[in-house]
Image (cartoon, rainbow, N blue to C red; front, side):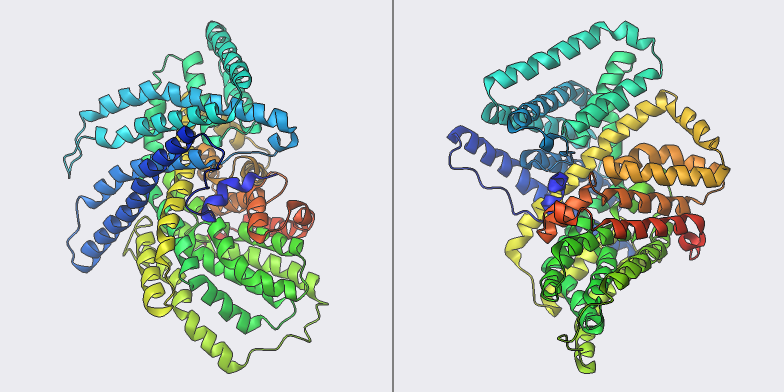
Length: 629
């Protein structure tokens, strides 16, 4: 029950300490890989920020666009993504499902972990030669502005795969017994050789292979705890190698395409921005103002939590960062007033689901990247659906706290409220700055994160006087780590989506969804329910990358506005993401609130029920999503 480990990068320190009992050789290797990956990754986050910010200033202030800025940012971005993926593998923070593994005995858990490590070795080992061939193919391509060989960019995939191979081998030697390793290697060899001899039979199965590889193999891999990115990548490699004549370099080229989309550069920058607003005191200033304004009411701090999540979500784009910024500022006082830990975590988890559509949500950005929907339109359309969810949760809070004893709580004076508002104004302005800069065309959705970073740094240094330079480097490394985990999933899911499309599955899916009884209404209901499940099992971004390019054209053909459909899909995935027993967001909330999951398991359902009603309202009333476009 610890699927939240992949969100830990927003909370963890620079790295976990090396145990004293470790063999000196492994400790030295760990330190070497850490230095080789973390410092360059941190520098790349800084460079990306400075390059894009310079592009905004040069174009908007001096009317002299930098023709090379986006090109250089794109070259560095793939290196950032792959180094981040390596860091996430070393730290054990790739997104994975551990629910079933944790139900096993300790002995079987070790065996399964060994099998997963061997499987990672198999995948990255198979990736090395195609990565080299892709590097060789791209070397002849020269970038237009900088005139650099494109091989300098795509070399990141091969280097990242090699480092992941080295890390996995070291983990295997350090943590697994020779007997377990031999058994796992033998099992994988038997499966691989048997599959190769079955290749003639598999090629005649047609689209039945999609069930075998992309349902059976992916499902089994994910259930055993293999990180989702590697489950996607290995299944795609196996499908292409065993059922088609397509070269395996296609997997690498599709990964390259998926991870190199310039709009996705906003992912690490918004993650870093989320960490900055917590460190510089902006999040605390907003919370303090809301507490002074309505904290004396019954359920006042619960309403403050919801309002703060709405406001903070308009800055960071990362739900884990939002919860980590808000909860520590409110939970101690709420517990003093008699609130139970399980109730607080349940509300925190539901508020994360409620705020998934608020720009600059990373899922919004991903939808724009993979479906071509306007980022500006998505940013505008995402505000009201979250308000509907907010109001639904407020109804639940009202009934839960209507008998709360507030006799010991003093109402803040007008002067105190005005003072809190004055202090919070720079923080409250940031969400509006971010949205305005995008909508007015000052900066793109990629570049606006750098404007937010510059604004937050200046506010922390000059206004709040709260800027801990010692925390910046760990925050940069954590940013690269979380971003690498996300982007590697996107890359591998892009390769899988290509395989699904080439198989003809996309046409079959379009025909099936178009023929759903009830027409547009039936399509929306099926999509709504499907994405609740997908959000729980695959999480939002992988589900969007896989199914967004397939289902959005169906929605358009049926007359569903693409922004309306995006809001329904995102809200539904948010419900799944924060719903136990599989939703990773629920366990992230438990970790942040320091409450065991079993204490919040049953208490979260009234909140999720209210959000499901809100989802039905959003689906039934398109104006909520499109009224201000």
